[in-house]
Length: 330
Picture 1 (tube, rainbow, N blue to C red):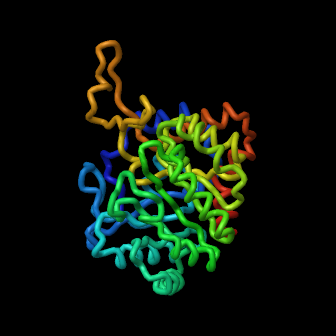
Picture 2: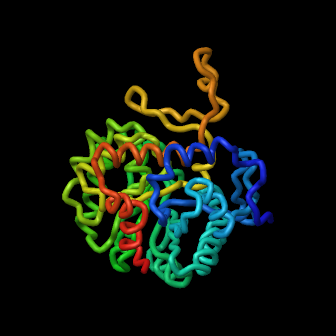
C-alpha cells in the first residue's frame, strides 16, 4: 500500500485554480462532512480512476484533500463505499480503525435494509461510530426506490434512540421535488426528533430547480441538515441557505469523487455528469482542461455564499462550526 500521493496526479493548474478562485474564500480550518476511504483487501477500490492508490487511509486522505484546500487542518466524517456487500463488516471496521486515530473525526456505519436493529445498535457502539449511512443500490428497485426501501423505519428508530446522525443519498428522477421523498423525510424527522438526518449533495439538487420546488415542503424540521458534497450548482446550495439558514449546511468534499475532473450540470428536468474524457472540453471556440470536481464544487459554494451575502463567520460555520456542533467535536 502506498502512503503517498502520486507525484503526477495534481497539475499546476489545480494549484493555480485554488489561489485564483478559492484561497480567500476557504476558512483556516475545515470539517469535511462527506468523504470516503477504502481498503482493497475488502474488495473496495476506485478502479476506474488512474492515479488513485489501491488503499486510502486517514493520512492519505489528508494528503489528497490538501490539494483541494492547502494548509487547512481537516477533520472528517467518513462513509464506507457500497461496492462489496459481502465485505461490509470489514469496511465498517476500516472506518472505525481510521477515525480512532483522531478524536476530531467521525464515522458512519454502513447498513443494509435487512439489518437487525439490535445488531446495528451493538455494532455501532462496539466500533465507536456515530451514525448510519444507507445507499439506494441496496434496494430492490434502485433508481426509483422509496426511502424506506434502503433506509427502513426500524433503523431510523435506533438512530433516534441513540441520538445518531444519518446520511441519506436519496434518489428518484426529481429527487427532493418528488412527493414520496418529501413524505418520508418529513415523517422520519417528525416521528424521530432525536435522530438528525443529513441530505447528501445539497439534497441531491444536481438539478437546482428541484431544490427550489421541493425544499419548501421540508421547512420547519429542526433535525434536518444538508452536506454540500460534489454539487457544483450554486443555486442548489443557495436554496438551502435561504430556506433553512446557513447553520443547516455543512461542507463535504465527497472524496474520492472530488479528485476526478469535470462537474455536474443541471439540464432539462435532470442533470448530466461531464467527465474528463467528454468531448465538450475541446469545442473549436475555446479548448481548455477540466478542473477537479472538488474545486468546481468549492467555487459553487463561494458563489452561493456571495449571492446570499453571508459573512466570513457564516462561511466558517459552513466549513467547520456546523459539523463540529452536530457531531460533538470540541
